[in-house]
Length: 410
Image (cartoon, rainbow, N blue to C red):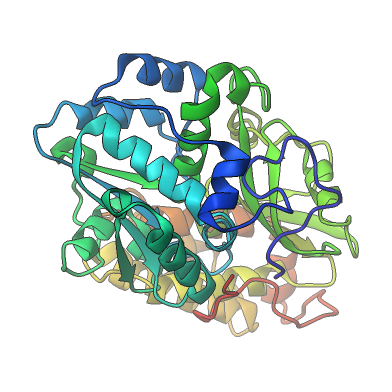
């Protein structure tokens, strides 16, 4: 995957527009200095609320709600989440490698608003270019504005906010079930912080010039699969799937299905007119989530891809509850058998496993994986029947989704 794809660069690109230098001096020349910000700054908090900025890590939680909550605490801390443990996602790594100062600005803004005693930026160990970019940027900042950099394990569950706080505090990168913002720790995705830095400088009205009335702003997406130039692109919320693919040079071969939202996402029928907003996708049972968007080539087998990812997700379990440890492993076994044509009928067993897994996990990992699997089995139902009979419609056996723990590191 290339660092990013621009075809061509658009005026609405705010985070990754080409030609911007990486040094601190160039950064200040491009964006200007941050305004003065006090703890619980009412004017800025009102601007953030009016902007409609929501979290860009996947959950879409209103940014101002977390800020208000943490700002009430007497002891506060802020953690920038740049772990991005999902193998198919590269947007945060690209942002940190290409524009680390904008993220550090957002971290400083959040820290000042909540009166944080400490600020930390967490990055996955293997994201070498992102780590180098952040390290260099921190060294260029005034000493009073230098956050702590913490490297965390490259695991899917490490990016869950309670797992991340545990890792930052020296513990295991495993979910604890707590909501950090309720105890004075603000965890924000690095892309969210980059947008926050821009809202602090330019205000809500400017931010809302892109996107829709209900879902304003731009977002980064990791686009993979059957497109001419896979990469990370910035798009205005409300753009269509076809427009996003055109930003990547268009489709490179016929496509019938797309994965939207990554490994906690859903499989949907390819539709160039599909509007990329949470509202539009919700009507089809989907969500933008982590904004991993994969165009599955018609020549590839959706069942094989679903089975491979399910096995990977079973291996990424934190090992804290039965639905993850036993349920996902058993589900992956069934899907392996289906993908290889070793079982004639698995519908009943899979349905039983779904009932044993759904809403029973200690964190979102089993439910997220289950949504990915069930949407795939539904969309690829014709292929399921072929596999039950020991055949497959695929003419290509090249893997489309990374599912072995290897990642494209930006």
